[in-house]
Amino acid sequence: MEFLGDIVFNNPNIDPGRIALKWDEGEMRYDQFVDLVARTAAALRRDGIAAGDRVSVLMGNEPEYLVSYFAITSIGAVYVPLNWRLNPAEHVNLMKNAGVRLLITAGEFAETIALAQANMPALVRVVTIGKPGPGIESFDNWSAAAAAPPTAPNIGRDDIAAIVYTSGTTSLPKGACLTHRNFTVDLANIMAAYADVAQTDRLLQVSPLYHQTIVHALIHLARGATVYLNRRFSAEKIARTITDEQITYVFMAPTMLYELLDVPNRDRYKFSSLKTIVYGAAPITGARLHEALGVFGHILVQAYGLTEATSHCSGLGRAEHLEAEGSIGKGVQGVDLRIVHEDGTDCGPGEVGEILVHGPTVMKGYWAEEQKTAEAIVDGWLHSGDLARRDARGYIYIADRKKDLVISGGANIYPSDIEEVFAAHPDVAEVAAFGIPDEYWGEALTVAVVPRPGKVIDSAEILAFAKQHLGGYQVPKRIEMLSELPRNPSGKVLKRTLRDMFGTAKQA
Image (cartoon, rainbow, N blue to C red; front, side, top):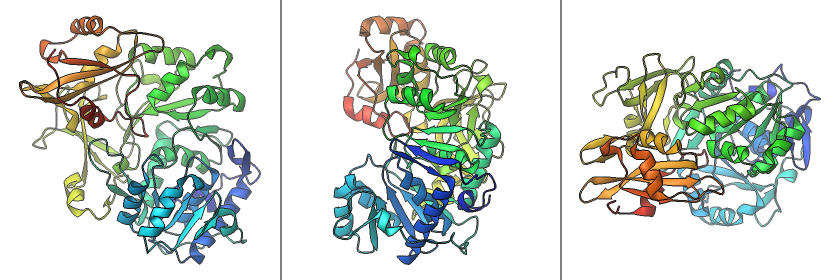
C-alpha cells in the first residue's frame, strides 16, 4: 500500500461481508464502510476540498471518525486531528495555525463550533454527527448522496497526509507534518515487528483516535480485521468487552493496564482470547509487570515512538520483558537509532545521551515552523529530546526527557532511576520524580507517589525504603502523595504540570 486511501479502496484483504467497525449501538460491514468513505470523500469535494487542503476532525471514538479519516486522506487532503480534551480556544488556535477549511465534529463541541464560525472566515463548512444548527450540516445528510470511490488524487507519497500536533509535555504543541510514505512505512514496520494481525482478529480501540495510536486501528483495517470502538475508558467495561467479544489485541497506557489489573472481581472475566497487549508512554516493571504477565500471559509489547516519527521507533517484544525489564527494545526494522553525547558523538554502552532517529517514518517537518524544524532535524536525524542508555546487548533504556533531567547540587539525576526504586514498594501504584527550583540546590528532587487502591503510604517509611537503594545525591528533598498523576492523552506524565503544582521546594 502506497497511500492511506489504499487501505479502503485498494485492499485485497477486505471481505465485504465481514464486520469492519463495531460500537455500543451498532456495527458496520466492510462494504458499508467503504461506501460511506466514498460518499464522504465526494461530499468533501463538493465543498471544494482539494488535495493539500486541511480538514479537522474533532470527536470521540465514533465510526464517523475513521470514515472521515479515510475520506480526507483518500482525496489528497490533509487530516488535522483535534484533541477533544483541549478547550475551544485551543481548538480554534490549532485550526487557524493549520489553515483548516472544513471541520467534522460532534454536537458536544458546540462552543468550539461557535468560536470557529466567528473567528475563521476561511472555514467553508462545519459538519456534525450531532444535531445540526445554523451553518452546521448533519453528517448523515452531508454524506447521503451515492458516490463511486474517489479517483486517485494527483499527489505523491511524500506529500503531507496529516498535521498532528504534538502533545506538548514540555512545550507548546507543534504541528508534525506526516506524509503518506511516513504512515504506510510505519504500518509495515509495526506489522513486521510484532503485529501479525489476521483477518479474524479483533482490536479494542481504547485510546483516542485523534492520537497517533490510531495506527493500531489502521493495522487492523489494513488486514481486513474488526475494530471495536470504545468511547471512554472504564476498566470494568474493558474487561467485559474483552470477555464478551473475544478481543485479541488492545493498546493501553500503563495506567489503564493497572486499572484493568485492579478491576473488582477480576476473576469473573476471561482474557484468554488476547494475543497482544501493546502499551507505551512509560515502562512497566517490578511487581506490576510480573502481575500483568501472570494474569495475561507473555503477550505484552512495549512500543516506543514519537509523533515526529509517525509512531514507532522501537519495541520490546513479548519474549523480552523478563530478559530486558524496563527496556524499549533495540529498535524496529527500517528505523535507525543513535544515542549521542551533546557534541554529537556516539555514546558507549551504559552512557546516557539523546536518542536520534533516522528513516522513512521521520516527519517532513513542523507546519510553518522552519526554525523549529531545523532544530529538530539535523542532517536527516530527528532529535527526540529523550535521554537513554544502551546496554552491551543493544537494549535501550529511557533515562528521561532531556528537559526533565534534574540537576541538583551540580549532580545529574535521572528521574527514571528514582522512579524505579519507589515503584518497587509494594504499596505504590505510580510514581513520578521531577525537579523544582530551589535557591540552595538549584533544583530540588521531588517525588509524587500514588498509592495502590486501599493503601495508605507514610512518607517517612517510603523514604527510608528508598534510601536503601539510592545514592545520597539521589534522595528526594520532598515527597508528595497524590490520588493520580497528571497525564497527556497518550499516558505520559506531565512533569511540567507537577512542577507548576508544587512550586518552590521545601528542604526535607
